[in-house]
Amino acid sequence: MAQTVQLAAETRTSKGKGASREMRRAGKVPAVIYGRGREPAQLALDGVALGRLLERIVPESTIVELTVDGKPVKTLIREVQRHPVRPGIVHVDFYEILAGQRIRVAVPIHCVGIPDGVRNQGGTLDQVIRNVEIEVLPDDIPEHVELDVTALTIGTSLHISDLSIPKVHILMDAALTVATVVAPRVEEVAAPAAAAAEGVPVEGAEGAVPAAAGAPGAAPAAAAGATEPAEPELIRKRKPKEEDEEEK
Image (tube, rainbow, N blue to C red):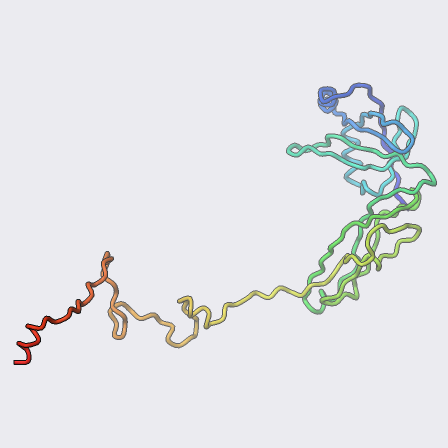
């Protein structure tokens, strides 16, 4: 069954950014309530009471009974806008729900148990999907959905089709992976041959000590600053006179 909480609200007639800033300075949070068959209404909430409420509920799956000017209205929180820099809530959207009217909500998925692949094989549990989208009557909204992952071994998975939720219609693809156990990561070690090719000394490898400058067998170092190549030997054709002198 869905959790139900109460929150007081009052209607407001002032609109615009200026009016909203004035409300926040007074400790109030602007809000709006809308739903099928009703006109959107502007509300004002006590900022402290709202903050405490949001700390102890899952907004997406909790029914909030708003008391608007003394009249109770059952709602779901559709959006909570927070300030990007300062702590605090900027605005809240409420959606009115009616008995007998199915609604779409996102419910958290809680993985239960320690997978066999984690306990005995050193793997890691990876929860890919954390919320499941469902269509349900307001009174049948679950606070969360439990998924037993105890039997998972490395390389095995559980899917949306493995979720058991009574009285709801699941709106997500049944083949989607919810949780899986992945193998432990192995740190890659460079092969000695590859390291030697890059000129990196390999611990324990024979002949890994580099030849010292000037040691026997070491190639002579190039002269510092020598940039011009040696002049090539010139080969020229002998003149007939030179060939006759050599024959003598």
